[in-house]
Image (cartoon, rainbow, N blue to C red):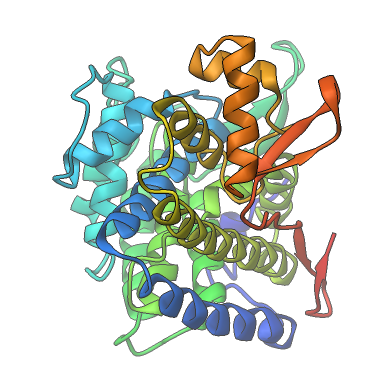
Length: 385
């Protein structure tokens, strides 16, 4: 097997620009919509949006690699990093590190990419792995860096990266390319094209002993943010997680050739879907603020706790709807109190009831905004799945 970095045209990637025109246009238009919508948020809602999107990205980018983090701890650490009120709960190094990396990415989005920045991110992202040999530096092992699966005696090699001896020179070339193609550089690329190439290019070099996926997705986020001129808060990792198997398959296929149209169209569909998810979240937060403002002073502590718990599920709604039993579990209320509380919430138009008696389920009265999976075809058409 000959990998992309072994071919004579490496890293001169080729692609059909016409296949990305529709997605590039959609992303820029929706980016303007997102910026305009965010401007309607008050400080509290903007802070909540920042925390929710960053914590979701932190948790999901780690989950893609099989590491399960505690969302509440990540959220608490993010609030502390951003100077917001927090519950001061104990936070493990893994949660603290990924939160620090996300805040660093958020604050430094406009800065040129540097080796020191990548090393800093690596130390933070991998702070929960104290036994890592090469922490905060490029890998130095002499053994091949391979992505494998299957039994020990008969592994399947999905990809083999360049040897460690080549990594410093490859990364010097990558960083130079990234900065040349950024806004203000002399080789500016369209936003989705730049982000998609940046992620694939970085993953192909695979410069670190571990953590390459998380840092590679952060680099894609940085490319998106630079092109839009502000931190994107795009739900990229969450969208990738929802189609993790396809993600790895697309990367594996792209690691074999330097003609990357198929990879870029796949990435473009994911990025536009991620942006739609973010817009849905912003609109949902605006609806939440309006509803809670209208009900201010009219709810008891149990009702408020249940509503906030439902809002935490986001634009797609409380899975399965809220039953009387779930309300009792969330609030500790007795069956009789639960019945009164729920009836009052329906009367105040905070909840909508569907079904009767023991089949009754309750949903928030704000519009649900599920976002369908989106693909960009090889012909450049955006198609809902």
